[in-house]
Every structure is written in C-alpha cells, then in structure tokens.
Amino acid sequence: MRQEFLHIVSHSDFTGRDRIVYRFFEMVPGLLAWGTIAGVILLSWLWPLGVAIFIILFSIYWVIRTFYLLVHLRVNWGRIRRFQKTDWEKRMRNLKWDGLWQLVLLPAYHEPYDVIRETLEHLKEARWPRQRFIVVLALEERAGAEIEKQAERLREEFKDSFRFFEVTKHPANLSGEIPGKGSNSSWALAQVRRDIIDKEAIPYEDILVSAFDVDTQVFPDYFYCLAYHFLTAEKPHRSSYQPVPLYNNNMWDASFLSRVVASSNTFWQMMEQERPERLVTFSSHSMSFKMLVEVGYWQKNIVSEDSRIFWNSLLHYDGDYRVVPLSYPVSMDVNVGAGFWQTAKQVYRQQRRWMWGVENIPYIMFCFWKNKKIPGRQKAHYIFAQLEGFWSLATNPLLLFAVGWMPLLLGGQEFNNTLLSYNLPRTLQILMTLALGGLLVLVPISWSFLPKRPAGRSMFGSLLMILQWAFIPITIILFGSIPGIEAQTRLMLNKPLGFWVTPKHRNPGS
Image (cartoon, rainbow, N blue to C red; front, side):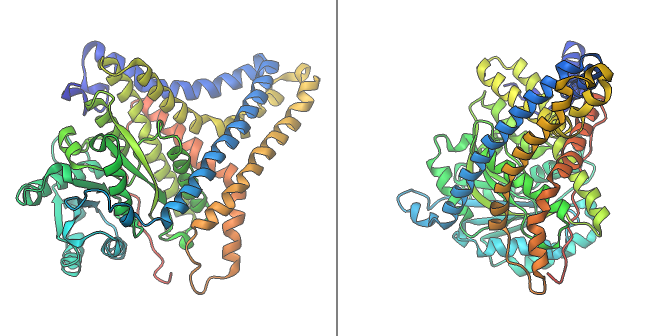
C-alpha cells in the first residue's frame, strides 16, 4: 500500500472527497453507539412491546455469548498453566537459534526508580544468553533532569547485565509528532539501529523487538517461549507475538475497583488469544525488527500506537500479517493512585485512553477502501470485528443494566398492563443471574494468578479478592461503557484525545 496512507491520523490529513469520506468513517462508531441507546429509549416510548421483546432476545444472546467466551477463557487458562511449566529452552534444541537477539525497548517518562529497577531485575534474571541481549531505556527530554539521573544510576547498576544497555533521549517538540510512547519508541529504535545494530552488523532478521511498558516484568521463560513461536511461525517476519498481560506487580496495593478492571482486561485478552483471527496487538508485545524497519517503526502522531502498529503492518503487507498468541504472561502494574478517588479517576482515564483505540476504525475503513489488494472478505472480517467490539463495550452493559428497563418507565399504562410488562423484569433477572453466575469461573482463575499475600496482610484481604467480583456490573458501566462512549463521542465530534501516561505508584511496605 502507498506509504502516504500508512501514517495518517484524521480527516485533516486530506482534502476533497477523501477528507469527507474519512470524516464520515470517524463518525460511524459514535453514531452506532448513540443510535443504539437513543433508539432503545425512543422506541420504549413509541413501541414498548417491540423493545421489550428485543431486550429479552438480546439478554438471551448475551448469556449465550458469556458462556461461549468463558469456555475460551477456561481453555486459555489451562494453556497458560501448561506453558508456564514447559521447558522452552529444551523445546528449542532442534531449532537453529544461536544467532537470535532479543531487543527490549522500555519507554520511560516520570516513572519511579524502583519501578524501572524491578523491570530490569526481571530482565536480568530471565533465561536468555546475556551476550545476545540489547536493553534500551528510552527517556523523554521533556521529563527533565531527574529521570536522566535515574537512568545513569540504572546504567551503572546494569551495564554488565546485558551485552548492550543503551539510554536514549527523545527530543521534545519534534515536528509531526505528539508526545507519547509511539514517537519515543520510534526515535529510540532509530538510534539503536544506527549506534549498535548497524555498527555490529547484526542481521535485521535475527532481532526480536519487545516493546514493553516500562513496568513490564517478564516471567523467566518469556524470551525462550517468544523465540520458539517466532522460529516455528509460518511467516515469522509477518507476525507480531502477544503475551497475556497480568497486573500482579502491585496487586495487593490496589483498590478493589482497579483490581476488577485490571483483571477483566486480562480475561478479555485471554479470550482473544483463543480467537487469533480477531487478535490485535495490545500494550506490551513483540515483533520482528526487520518488519519494523520495513514498515517505518511506530506511528509518531497517534495515541494508540500499540494496536496501530498491527494495522500499519497489515496494510503494508496487503493483508499478509497476523498476531501469534503466546499464551504466556508478562506482569504489569495495577493502576494505583494516592487514594481511592484518585485511583478511580486514574482508572477511568486509563480506560478512556485504551478505548481511544477506536481511532483505528476510520483508519482501517479508509485504508481498506484505498487498498484493492486485500481480499474483500478479510476487510469485512476486520471491520465487523472492530465495530462490533467497540460497540459492545460501549452499549451492552447499558442495555442490560440500565436502558433495557426503559419500556417499563416510558411504555405507558397500556404496556404496563400487559403480561409481557409483568414478566420483563423477572425474565431479565433470571437471565442476568445466569450470566453473573457463570462469572464465578473468574474466581479460581484470578486466584491462581494472584501473587503471594505480603507479610502483614490479613486473611480479610484475601477474602476481598473473591468478593470484589460482585462489583463487576458496576465496573463494566463506570470503566467500560462510559469511557467507551466518551472516546467514540470525541472521535465523532472531532475532539481528539492526547496521550496520557498512567502514573506509577507503589507502596514501599509491600
């Protein structure tokens, strides 16, 4: 596909018909979400009988879909447990891998020294030959002198732990960029390519790049697991490799709200790993350096760089690109603020930033329209999967727990005298009880991932780890539907969201 289409951001990048078409595509997700909500409310007044039947049928569908996804979750849980027990180095013995390098990219902003140090300690302890490790701590110039002092301290401490330990500094206010992980990562990788990879004459096809959030802590066999999947992939340089994100680093410091939201994200990623045809890169993941060079690194002017790099690659290779699920975890921080309400505010902002991934929908719709080489069936699959996914996140919880009751409030006396009106709340209660009862499977899975209870913590804290799941109907509305609708509304009204760096907070006593 023509390169000028790969790094577009919004309709403002175009003129004429292209500008109008792209602007329409930006409005589609918001129109679908608001159209659904407004349509149900309006028809609850004009045609309450029809809406009541729709809500019952939709609730039945939601229950079936819930159990369908829980089966995927249960299967992936078993696969993760099995993969964590696998000796991946042993499985590599029949493969040619002695020239393979691991490059770990850690973009940093204002994160505390202890957070970065813990990440580097886990990299140091990971099973992979030290002489084929490149670790890059990518700083932002705008972060000031304090982070540079931290970096020098870390460089001194870890300089002998890896073959190369590089610190880069991304300049502020570069033309065509927004401050964020994408622009920082692209700058850092270009510097490392010039200063290390090209100087050492390391073949591009022999380098695996892990683009991690700076709080990402690897489990011991992550790099062997990654290398095995890379070497056995059908098209290794046209694939990204996605681990399962756990949020265990500071789980015991977090409030129940942020724990439920974080764990729900883990479970969704586990379900998606069992449906690889839908899988898109998220947060910390890995890919071929050769691919990154060919695509032009990460896009520097968007917020959702982690998923956009997948779409950039898919379009660059005319549809010949995929995500390989690793079913192997990495661990990151739960969102923790200075207090309960500050934490709730941060969780909302983080969820809204993730929901801003909806900006990819007009991008892929427009680029699919321009690209005639990708099969129509493949285009339709991706567009439907993305539209349905963001639409469901924004509207389904409201339809089930709030808007679905509108026929009883707006249907008038005539409808409220019908047998259907009498049975509607009872039917919904039974269906929701079934669905929420099915979520009990989350309890043993979340418990199995839970890190050991810190010394000094009571058994009551462990009990809360179970009871917290009673709040999931609240969290999926407050931290799912509402930020999802806000993100889609912003896109529809041309009110873009800037990159927000999640603050990292740790309890020193943990």
